[in-house]
Image 1 (tube, rainbow, N blue to C red):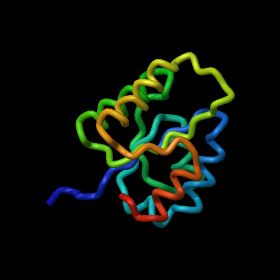
Image 2 (tube, rainbow, N blue to C red; image 1 turned 30 degrees about the vertical axis):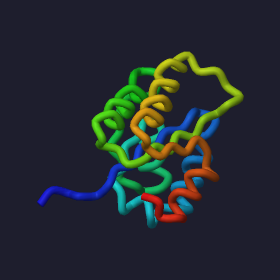
Image 3 (cartoon, rainbow, N blue to C red; image 1 turned 45 degrees about the horizontal axis):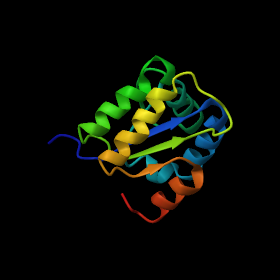
Image 4 (cartoon, helix red, strand yellow; image 1 turned 90 degrees about the horizontal axis):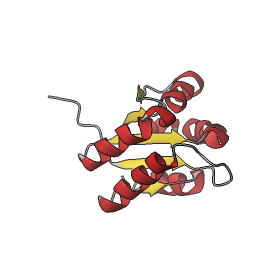
Length: 126
């Protein structure tokens, strides 16, 4: 039988990657029960710093956000934890907004900061 684990997407802007690593370390026991997908750099950090198995997409600026959005639209992702840096402009903002929009269109839980992601994980909402 195929692996029936639910999939979580983990993405973080450069200014929030340390927050994502800290979140993943503190919730490692829960996160390892899920299939994890992430954009390239975030995924690499989660592998190296947290020893988590992560399927890596392209980096965000090269289409990783769009790849994750497509998986959300296909019903393959249970929730998206996208730690957004609201103080930094991103040249690929249309892809970022597209991912956030797709999560809302498909009613997929979306955490844009560590506090919300921790709430979702700790309340076993997934």
